Image (cartoon, rainbow, N blue to C red; front, side):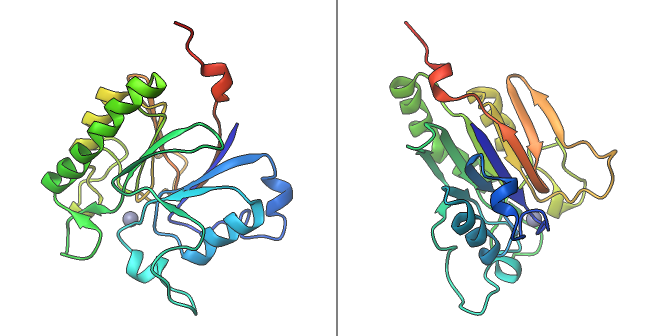
Length: 218
Ligand SMILES: [Zn+2]
């Protein structure tokens, strides 16, 4: 199956009348935050696929901004503090919104609060293992993990709890945004155990094995 992941930057390749031709094979979309709701709604309407999202730390400036103010992007599924099973693709997804706390704004959290939100996911991840034979396929966040793709300033430091989650539950992907990439030399893909940590700044198209190919036979 094909996945489209987006964050932080509106891309002409997506916000285009050719989106349907370019991305007709995409099965599911994921937003890692700091994108306007109309952009997410355009992806959903044009491609007629499920879109899961977490908010970024600039939600109040970037994401709400449209002529009809809304509290959420219409038709999209908020993954924040949730573990969800997508029935269309069979994927197990979980998400945490926002960034580390730096100016007391909305959708900013301390390291302790990040730990609390990650802990909140654990019972359902354990239930997934019993029910589906695996904990999690894709972990979706706005902020990166600690010392992976992150930066030194308080706003762009990574969350330590995310490192624990990906080491413990080993999703196939941890997809994040928040760290803007202005040079091809900036690292945006890092393997941590069995998990590929990806900064999706802008957009990425990913291939994921179909669930029928992943069935474990006891
Ligand atoms: Zn951000």
